[in-house]
Length: 233
Image (cartoon, rainbow, N blue to C red; front, side, top):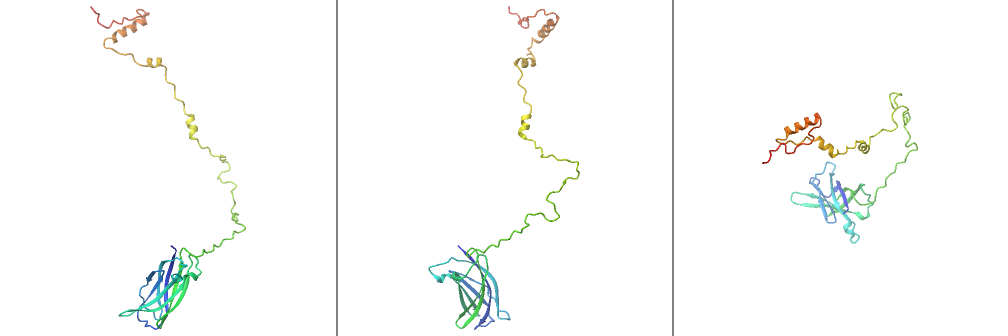
């Protein structure tokens, strides 16, 4: 719901009542009511408050009385409280601009007494939108400041230094492509030759004799598979 900020500034021109007693202000709007603190009048007869309050306000087209903001000045004596003045403002007739303050002085009377209340009303989220002042772009906008070149002739300390036209950034994908390919697996014969011969309990000595006989002249090329085993009866 739209909201309005109401600041109670002061009460002046108070007549028909003693200024020795403290005063307070009631503000009412569409069933909402607030009260300021009780404050005594100064030597000039003014009562200063400077208190702010927030109200919800929605325009009612059916009942015009609900669009009124009431401001009442009350005084407190030793035994009771009494009303000094009652005044109101028609909210629907005001030219509200969203976010801009509107100061009003409400002069009211009640049973032979009177006073003037000063309020500041600020619509928070309703009213006309304030016109935005557009800045005129100067003719020389975007031109360099006098005495500052757009681009220096030689940004480097040494004229012999020639920078690259564009920096070379290594591509991770290309680096992966340049890696050496894995070697193919060795052939089965190579794998078998690289393994040591199997060793059995009584076969190692015969294996050494076969190796020496093969180096001497190739005699006894065939080995007796039963050489290392006991003969059967």
